[in-house]
Length: 315
Image (cartoon, rainbow, N blue to C red; front, side, top):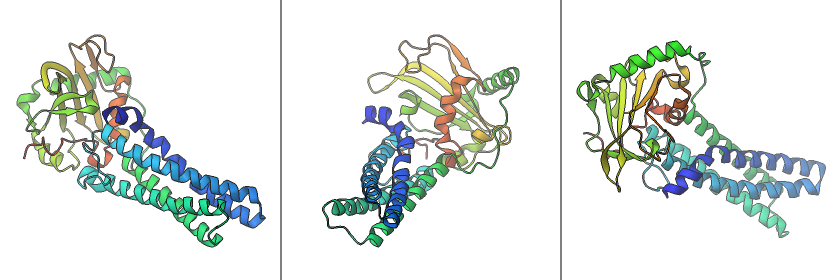
């Protein structure tokens, strides 16, 4: 499951375009074929409806793997729990599953046509339109879930010198994070999105309630995730990277909701998944942090926070 999620889960976003495009083209080809009385267009529409069904089913399957790879879900479930992303992931999954089921009707219609037992053309067209609309709405919801409405134009990248100063300030703010921040997990948990390391999460004390309820954190909030290397399915004493986030003004970093990222790892272990060879300190603006920003963008609905599994969260 882990291997499938890691290798095939990220294919979900591009795969979702196939059933949407195929369903739209199928309706257009079918309508044009009826109008022009062109048999080749009708046959093209039937083929496209077959591809719609196959790619829709593949998209649903890959979507579950993608959610698992991002750490949104731990167990396989046809309908994700309602608390994930405030129910938005659940709604998206339900829409996708319904679209895949509905595409089974257009597939059946295509099969019947191939056997010379076609449904009435109006019925086939209605089913085709319904599938295209539902798939399009599902894709739209997925895009809104990840990216949200793009109301602002991202600000230009900060100058390297400014980024360095901001990064040094950020790391100095968390020098004593265990004393100054609140630990929000009751037990160390394994995070697949952080290299399958065991982690603890610390949050600014005034932001704990907002963090636990997946509400927006106030400006100035700090989130620190300390990590430890895995040792046979248990947390070792070997430290991994220290992951740091700080909430600033959204207008300063609209593409990340105001969040700035940093990472420090003083003694990288050999063969680590990031391929880090020596001590590193990545400050805001460092290109190596782009992967952090991309991953956290999938949690925009939760103020870019992936949170802590319910069974590991402090009450």
